[in-house]
Length: 145
View (cartoon, rainbow, N blue to C red):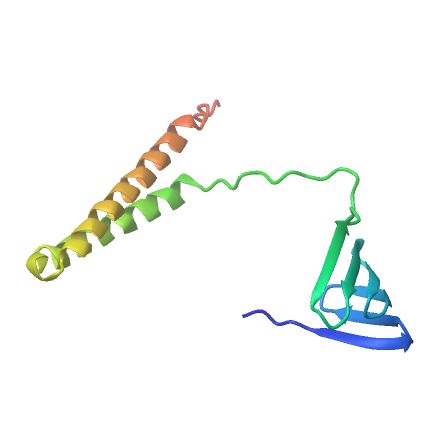
């Protein structure tokens, strides 16, 4: 569960400052209509009929950008060693599940057998991926004296 924080301070009648964990905002207006401007650039208009619970809210989310050039996230790549270790762990897990599932097959061991097959396939995939990455890496030239 995440920690939440909010505090509202009334400055004048119809004007409040709201303090949040990540931003601060100013709300102008009362029960029938209000307008909120946040420090993140978010603007909210709310109009309602007091006492009925019926209201309409419109939000424009014009957040400020810190840089003009937004960098795109590069896909995370792992080393072949990481894939190899994960593949071996998954295959060992599949063997353990088979050892538990086969003797107890009649008493619900089918779930262990199914999990063993799935984890074996995942382990094989990881090992093949490690091999593919190793084959794609350029080999080092021999040292010359």
